[in-house]
Image 1: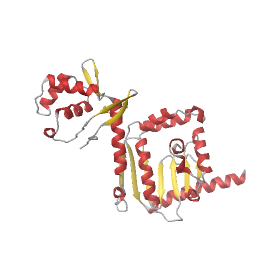
Image 2 (image 1 turned 135 degrees about the vertical axis):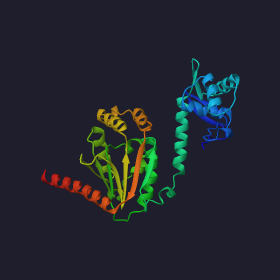
Image 3 (image 1 turned 90 degrees about the horizontal axis):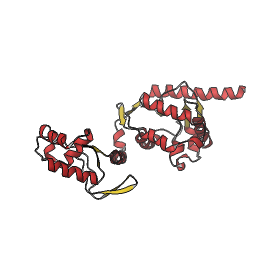
Image 4 (image 1 turned 90 degrees about the vertical axis):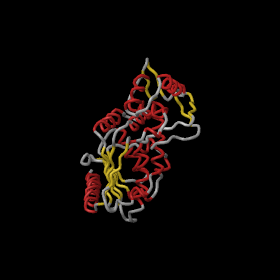
Length: 299
């Protein structure tokens, strides 16, 4: 069941602040428990409809009688508050409002994420599902803070990824120069100009970074825990194209990049406790750095 704030909520739509009073999105499976207004919103969340279509859906799917005038009145109220848009005779949900709702619930879900979510990870493989990279990024901080406490002082942390972007988008305070940064061994599998800048930045704050195309997966190693991220091919191609096309920071279009990060796509994060796998990945990672040292000595 979903509920939006019971008090006045202010959204910025079309460069204007729209105040919405007591707007509920009740996702109860029993239609008898929710109002006609809420049912209309739920119906339009699934597909765009005319007033006549909505009347038929009320009768056939919800077993409720509603007049043409009642549907019209509710839709006009929703349109006035910029929750729906009318094109000819068809009504649809305002995509800007929908995006605001998605961000609201995403932030709420993130705040509700606690250590309890991970309490069984010692015993079983845990799979987390995210709707965008942007959403995953917010969870990554919590995931890191949780597993960082699980490792001992001598353990190193291995990070494998295709691209750097945290230093571009997130607070500078998270990248202070500190001794503990030397525990991080980062492997970037892409060699774009923007990725090289990212690698240089991480080195300046004390992290160990190497480029290698041998590893293409997004993987993190914390002690015996292996965290693997699975993204679909489409979002991977969009990221690759974006990074390949940016030759310097002056060409960086942050708004366009954030749009890619917020694009809805299913992302899976699999967390497992597997000492042998973690040790193998850790050993292979360190071999890359040893190889880099040897190459520098030869040069």
